[in-house]
Image (tube, rainbow, N blue to C red; front, side):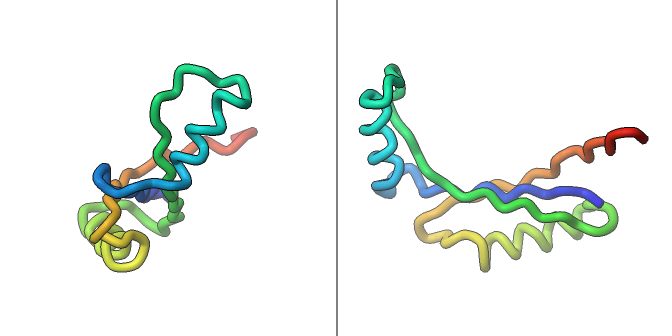
Amino acid sequence: MARVVVDVMLKPEILDPQGQAVQRALPRLGFEGVSDVRQGKRFELEVDGPVDDAALARIHELAESFLANTVIEDFTVKVEEEKAEAGK
């Protein structure tokens, strides 16, 4: 089983009020030096079988049609390496 991660972020030209609220709160919490914050979404998909070109194409289609609003959001698709289970 493999894990595929889809990260969805607002396009740079789209206002991000949640990110701005976090950025404004950071100095009050003692975190200085952060000039910008953008908020996004992360989807982790556990995929049965190999993640070949066909599987990635299908996940890209899923992300484009269901996970992201491509009018205002960009997304990336990446395969995470499988982690060895403890004790094996």
